[in-house]
Amino acid sequence: QQQVKQSPQSLIVQKGGISIINCAYENTAFDYFPWYQQFPGKGPALLIAIRPDVSEKKEGRFTISFNKSAKQFSLHIMDSQPGDSATYFCAASWGGDKIIFGKGTRLHILP
Amino acid sequence: NAGVTQTPKFQVLKTGQSMTLQCAQDMNHNSMYWYRQDPGMGLRLIYYSASEGTTDKGEVPNGYNVSRLNKREFSLRLESAAPSQTSVYFCASSVLRGGNYGYTFGSGTRLTVV
Image (cartoon, rainbow over the protein chains, first blue to last red):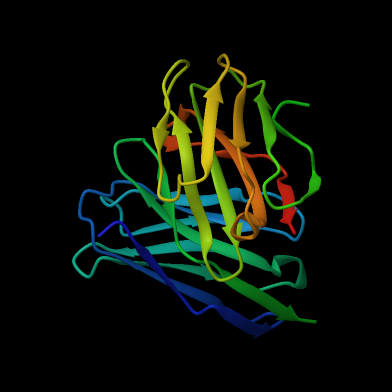
């Protein structure tokens, strides 16, 4: 119930394409869903986040789509660039406390 | 620069040795966390501290101990290192800001136990 299931494990997208990463959860008490981006040799960094009362949030080329009834959320990267190549983690938390992370998606954008 | 500082960046231990991973933040955050990252396993919470003087177990606490020395510092100790503890360890701190829980991660400690 505390898990966040993330797919795919790895993803290759052509430059300019749309990258889509999906996550699912079971615990309906989760009230905060962030996405983190991690470059090799660095710690994860907060990319974008959403709360369950909103169905979509967009920041630049990054969009979170949230489906509360299906308990699923996804990250869309529009016009994907080689600089977007990184590992992406979806996550969830409740009550402002500890965050539970998905297992990560390694994204590679072909130049 | 403001942020989370972890030391050391790299460490090799022999099985049975002990060591302490240090973490300090200068953002006046209340909560601090230790995660380990393993290939295909994502980030798993070892211990966390919601405030100075309190600590709680996370998902994978066995083989580790922590100390919240003060508001700035949160250390992770391996009393008797095992090869299964070979991993990259991340410290993080957080604060509620504008409705978002801003987790700030350190750059990690890469630990190898031989």
